[in-house]
Amino acid sequence: MNQSGPPVGTVLHAVDVGNSNTVIGTFVDGELTEHYRLTTAATRTADEWLLLLKQLGLGDFSGAAEAIIASVVPSATAAIEQAFSRLAMSVIVVGPGVKTGVPILAENPKEVGADRVVNAAAAFDRYPGGLIVVDFGTATTFDCVSPRGEYLGGAIAPGLAISAEALYQRAAKLPRVGVERPRQVIGRNTVDSMKSGLFFGYVGLVDGLVERMKGELDFAVRVVATGGLAARVADVSASIEQVDEHLTLHGLHLIYRRNQP
Image 1 (cartoon, helix red, strand yellow):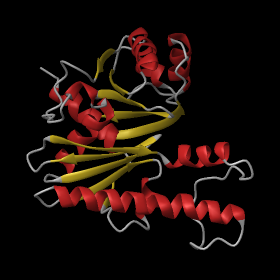
Image 2: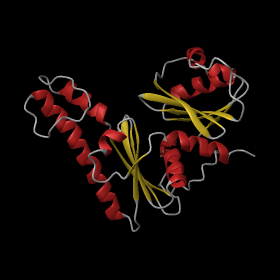
Image 3: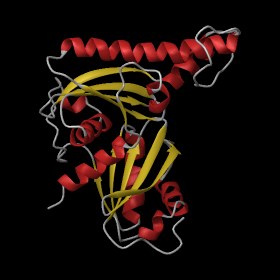
Image 4: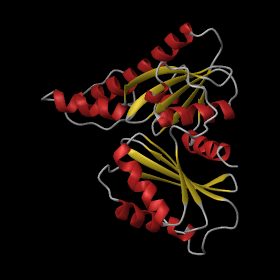
């Protein structure tokens, strides 16, 4: 918690609301200085969010900062926006009417999640050129960006954690296991066999989808990964070239700048 009050300079709180986790990053004069990963609770009220923000020290910025939110959980969006507003902060919610700088060439642009547009904006700004952006969240998303920065479309796969949970829920004799890389592919017991199938099978899913996407694109791409499990998967993936842990937060900061007078 900030004990000495907010630092001097432009302060922005960037909020990425996912189905499982909400990530909040604080930028001071364009530099990411703090970040927090919280459990997303769709039923959490504005009062509860306000208390939580104050516990994190963000209440110290009351009236001295702004906020930007990208959310795929509509029921949480209004509560978080209201909590920041009660701290006397102006709030941008990424959606229709917000300048992202990303032309969306999908059949129905309104269907494209805000997080995917934010990732595309950030990736193209940080790594100009053709891109495939892989975001490891509750679902794992694969998004294609053209060399002109256009969002072309992509793929959505079940995330690693929910794949593991589904295996436990639907197979009566299998235990619940954590998502981690096992020592070898050939498991010598049930738990290691499950870990192998989940982890290395998922790496195969990622590499397979990326290669198929490359086959449909007529330009070279750089493959950038983000999200909680990105680094672990990238260690053994043949396709991931760059891990950018805070890509979405940087995208939110970029879109905030694009919406200033």
